[in-house]
Image (cartoon, rainbow, N blue to C red; front, top):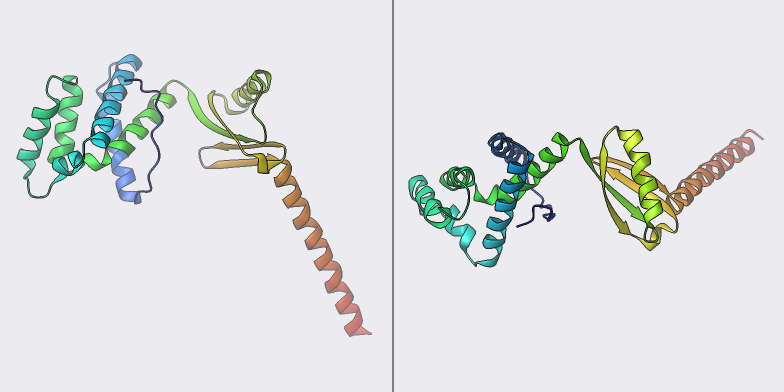
Length: 207
């Protein structure tokens, strides 16, 4: 299963998100190199697809009715021989602690860790029209110089931007779109007009 598949993000509480990051670090530590990390990610993709396909599968591994030992043994019976020993052991730990519900964010965190180890950074770019190959290479090269890392570009077309681009790198957002410029210009004009109106009121009251 290709680990290039992007898993959708889900809204989680900060504690669960942090715990998923810790589990991802632990699984990443089991990989001797990038190739093995990719293989582990691929196995997680397969497990996630199985969980999504079979109704009640995730609930079975999390079920409060079963004890920690029973959940671990169930995970071993299901995944034994189907995934690598590292992944089987990891899934057993998750199941024993009722944490299989964290598998998707764990996979996402591990994917991010692998990108970081490779000196890569995820960048989303919103554009008004599809990028040409030349435009795409120009943006990538500019980001490479600015970020000091290899950008992995994900482009989305949004006609409402009118022109220009909106770049998102992690929590940072840079709006260089025409629509964004127009909004900023409008705010500046409104602020200027409001200031002029206030001055006129002050002058009138003084008169």
